[in-house]
Image (cartoon, rainbow, N blue to C red; front, side, top):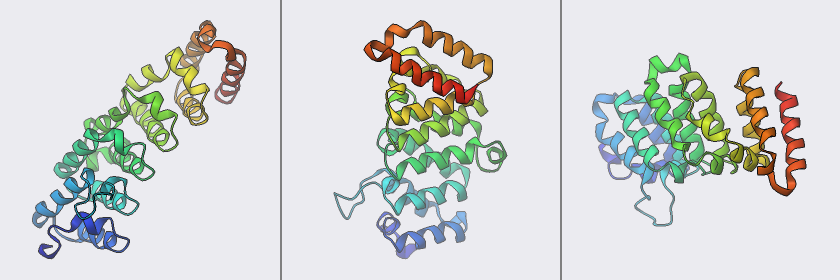
Length: 232
């Protein structure tokens, strides 16, 4: 590992080097890897030193595989440090074609009930899920970040964290989601996680706020009815 010191981020984002770094994560005992792990954590959110135009490791087509391997392999203390770094830079990572998978795998490791006890805590799952809060509608309407929102919805239901639902199901937010292809799909997924009574309650609010739909209210309401027909 000493021979790799100072080059981990560069190798992690190389087509061949990424496999070397992943194998090191898997095979070397954690007791000897503190400095190695730290380079990965730093490289996850920093611009790669050898090229100012190179994206962060977590948003790189090869580098993100290293971050995923890190989440599922290393001791919890280092996982937490990486989760903290990702949470601080989530607005850059979540919309990325590759970075969105980094957040998803972090949520999956801690969000699925059978994995919480093995790999981390409920608090860590909630932490990554909260990365979308405040920008839920924006993320829903983008191709890659909408995948992260879907994962957050599933985990929020599992962990009893209602904040994302409160933000998603405001009448004004629903209108924006109905106007967007990706947003419509997330909206349907959201309703599928809810009870029949909860969906009916949201439906009543939407129909009661038709004015918010503007001049295209008729079309949007028809789209809303189509979504409900798939859910109820």
